[in-house]
Length: 112
Image (tube, rainbow, N blue to C red; front, side, top):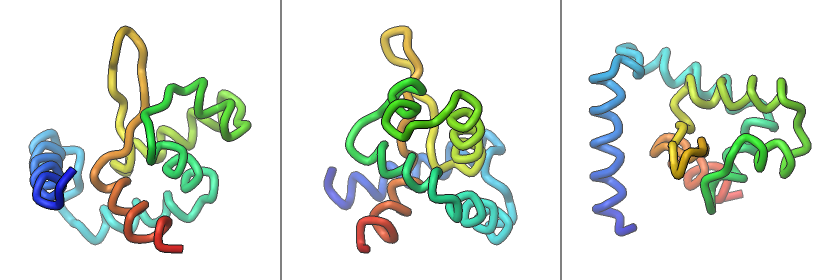
C-alpha cells in the first residue's frame, strides 16, 4: 500500500469509528485506554502475530500458547481499544489489525 492509500484508509476508518460511536469523543481518554491495553506483553504479541496475516482465534491460541479465556480476554481488550477488529471470511472469523494497530506496530514495535 502506498503512503497515500494508507492515509486514506486511516481517514476512512477513523470516520467510520466516530460515526459508529466506537471512538471516544475525548481523544485523550481514547489514547489512555489504548496505551493501557498495550502495556501487556501478551496483547503486544498478538499485534505482532497479526502484522503479516489475519488469524483465527485458534491460530492465535496455538501460536502464542494461550488458553481459551486468555485469548478471548486479550482479543476483546484489543478490539475494544480499536487495535484489532474481526473480519468474516468464508464462514470463519479472523482478527486483523486496524489502522491504529498498524500504526502502533509501525511506530513502536517495528522500530525496536
